[in-house]
Length: 321
Image: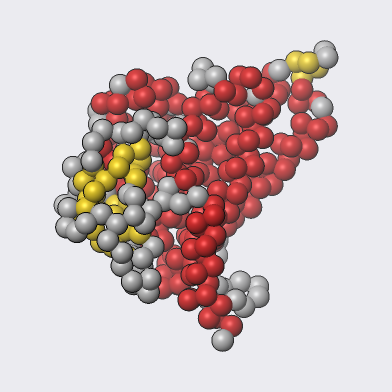
C-alpha cells in the first residue's frame, strides 16, 4: 500500500480547491442555505468546469484516488452538493446513496428526480424525493425518499449480496469527513494563534497545544486508514466492505473528537455562523449520521466480520477459520 495519493489525484484536488475558492469557499454553503437553488447553479457549474462529471471511481485505482481527493477537498468547504452520490451515478445519471433500513434519508435528495439506493441488506432500488428538504437539525438539505419500484422499507434477506458501490460510497464519504475535520483543525490553529489572553496567544498554553497535538495525531491516523481502504477496494474488492465499515466507524470517532475540540477552542465564536467552523460542523452532520451513526455502524462492522472475516495483524471472523 502506498500511503500517498498519486500525483494526478493531488493535482486534480488542487484544481478543485481553486474552483471551490472561486465560489467563495464556505460562503458558498452559506449562500446555498439562504437560496437552495444555488446548488443546481453555481455548484454544479463549478464541478462541471473541473471535469468531475467525467470521473468514475469504479474505473481504475487512479480514478478512485482522484475521487477520494476531490471528496476531501469538497469537505474542506462544506460543498453543498451530493458529490459522493453523483460520482457513483449510473448510465441514466441517477446518483447513488446508501440509506438506513426502513426510513430512507439522503442529503440533497431534492436535487435529482430519481436516486439509486441500497442498504446493508441489499439494493438496487430506484427512489424519488418525498418533498422539499426537511430542514431539520440533522442538516438543512436532508430529504426523505420513497421507493418507486417497491414499498419503502421492504426488507431484503440479511445474507443478500452487498451492492457493488456500497463500499466505495462509504469510503468516499469518509474522505469527505477527513476533509472537514482537517479544515476544522486548521481553523482552530489559526484562531488560537490570533486569540490573546493574559498577554499572549492562547496557542502558547500547553493545554491548548496538547489538545491540538492529539487532534493532529488522530487525523494522521485517519488519513492512513483512508489510504489503506482505497487500496483494499482494488486489491480485495470482495472483502472491502468490512474495511469500508471499519473506516467509517473510525472516521466518525475521530470527527467527534476533533470537531468537539476545535469548536471548544473557538470559544463562543465556535457556535456563530459568521465563523467557518460552525458551518463546517453543521453541514458535515449528514455524513456522520447517515446512513448510520456510530452504534449502527459498529453493529454492521461486527456482522461483516462474522460473515467475511477481517484482514489485520490478528485473525478475526471467518478469516481465522
